[in-house]
Amino acid sequence: MQLDTILKTAVEHGASDIHLVSDHRPMARVHTVMTPMDFPELAPEDVMAMLKHMAGEDSMKVFEKIKDADFSYEVEDLGRFRVNAHLQRRTVGIALRAIKTEIPPLKELNLPEVISRLTYLPRGLILVTGDTGSGKSTTLAAMIDAMNQRYHKHIITLEDPVEYALHSRKCMIEQRELGADTPTFASGLRHVLRQDPDIILVGEMRDLETTAAAITAAETGHLVLSTLHTVNASQTIERIIDMYPADQQNQIRSMLANTLQAVISQTLFKRIDKKGMVPAVEIMLCTPAVRNLIRENRAFEIPNVIETNRALGMNSLDNAIAELYFNGMVSREDAIAQAAYPEKLERALVA
Image (cartoon, rainbow, N blue to C red; front, side):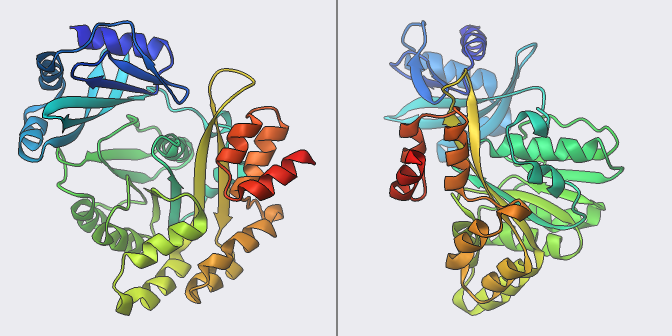
């Protein structure tokens, strides 16, 4: 089928995403740049045929009902893809995210060493945040794989859809997919504590019910890892608090202060020294000072704590970006464009 040929060509060219839209040529995103592929325009019936080929019966029912569906698709000897099918201008559009078959070790991801240390924590909540496509899933998979090689524990993941296939090594790993194995993150989390887990991965804390269940799981002695679409630590904490009704926010501040262990915020950059991408990573560790700021509703002061505790492994986004720039990995323009404080970073890059 032409679909698999398109996907094979895209993967060979290092594409992270492939877009199939009616009346357009297939497009591939290679190192952040959208590039037309050397295939003819797709007719509406072509894209619909591709959707029916990829989606199972349940996913097609969801698509027909709500005009959107998320699922995974695997091509033998090529790899797996995270798929979103949707309608645009009354025709089908498909976005595919290529998922690497091999989980890269943490040390190969250009991540701060402190992230490896976080995999030794026995309990609590670790959040990996960032925009879509910032590498959150890869970081989480690498952290789980590190624990899988070290411990004899029970790991349960709740994902939408399952991305990396995690193989049990020393740990027993169960991966539950939304739709196929459990209806929602919240439903899966309600039952997960009766499944005797040690480590729980929640694909995304996307609503109040899921967030509350994840924090409760961390509070009861489990290590919980999850993601949010936020750009830094202080915004992450404020987003969680704002999910709750006003009369519950003091309580959740206290619970979050007790359970949160770290926030890892990632931004991906196109490398200029060689092909590929490299992350700039903000790290917030929950020291007593950070826990007090959370309890006292002073999350806006967290950037100052991060800035003054670099010796502990904390790092601000702009410091991380500056390090990449001075190491010759990213351009000055990209560094300034994605900085939290562009004018301040621009002055720092002159030094």
